[in-house]
Image 1: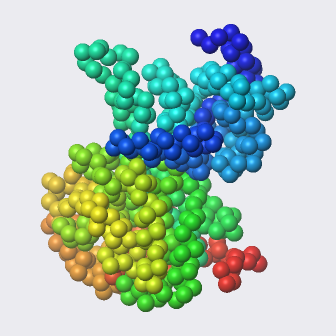
Image 2 (image 1 turned 30 degrees about the vertical axis):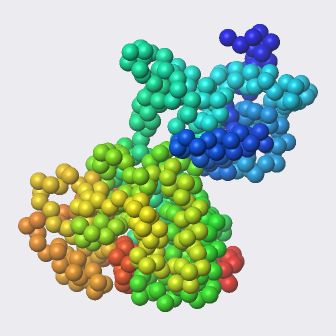
Image 3 (image 1 turned 90 degrees about the vertical axis):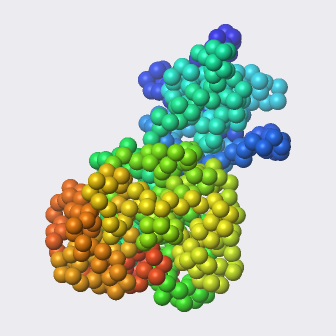
Length: 544
């Protein structure tokens, strides 16, 4: 129990935060102070071979961390530590979080100056914070901090909600015995933490970019993917959205966001810092020469939409592993980390391209977040280096972000490619009906559902490069295209019941020279109408 003097001060703070017990509260122990910077320099310099890179992980994206973890917004957040409210109001670390939550500090609650932390009373203030945080409904800390670690461990043992925002393990756990384990068993709290992590569901991330070329088919595929995940998996879907501020109130954007919210999909709006590099490539006219490889090189917006996945490791995830897929997928059964093999990837795991046995396809990937985060800066630097800019962001291992991934990670033996993968199964691959239960994710790589529908009904294919793939659909003795399309359509009817799936939408197709899954389609009247009055003029949005 806390000393009486400490307890009384904690009582007063908790009473003020909770308005006399009327509301609960979240406690955040956030470390970026000068003494923490010095501590982390020493911590990371210890040469014992352990990973020590997560002192500051996610510190600048706390708003995304809170969003991803669904921290309740109707509860105040008590910021523990030596921070004054003036610091919280002015610091870039709290800018977005401050706009989302009611942040409290000791001096904002007791403004008489008696609870301002100084060099003389910091230990007392620390004890008060510890007591306040222990009474919170949810505690969020930094795992490297002993203060945070002790609180999280004690709450973990007591079954109270607690986690750390910086990802990775809790170092202190490695040296503490499990309170319920005998010395003979040699149980460690690490085992308890690992069990708690395994209870967490795998997060599934997909990206959607809105611009004047956004296709209705694209949004429909995203909805089908989400609904199939909701119907058949325990995945926690996360959508990374990209759109200009002027598009925020466009009807199609608002409707899609509302639909995602209704499906309990977490959404993160994101603009990459390297977006300017893509703009520069197009401003210099360096991308046009790659159009014969992929239609992605037709515009900066098209290229940006697919490159967005590069930033997943720095988007605020605290999990060790995250699943990414394109939107043109269909989930058939539950997907967990075990779906991808007995051993998680060291960096990236993916399936193959058009052939079952070779190539790497980035349409479905599992990220090892700690290692991908550790290599992120170097990867981005290499991806947007001057040599690659001059090449129009075409890489020696292929175009687009898939080429960038393979170019950087495969040369370092950091990509694991799984042949014949049931988690990235293509509709045009042959499979016996007895093997169908082994397929967990169908990926409409290359031809999209409407392309299959047209080909199966008329034998015609708008894109000549799809023909070799589509010819595989003719063997209906095997479990192929038509049966997978039937499964996709059954989900589509639930998300868009008014759509007539028997009618082929009007499309214009281009090459898939990058062996990727992008097909240019004329913008539907619905989406085009949504963007009326929003006009592009020299990259400046003007609302008429």
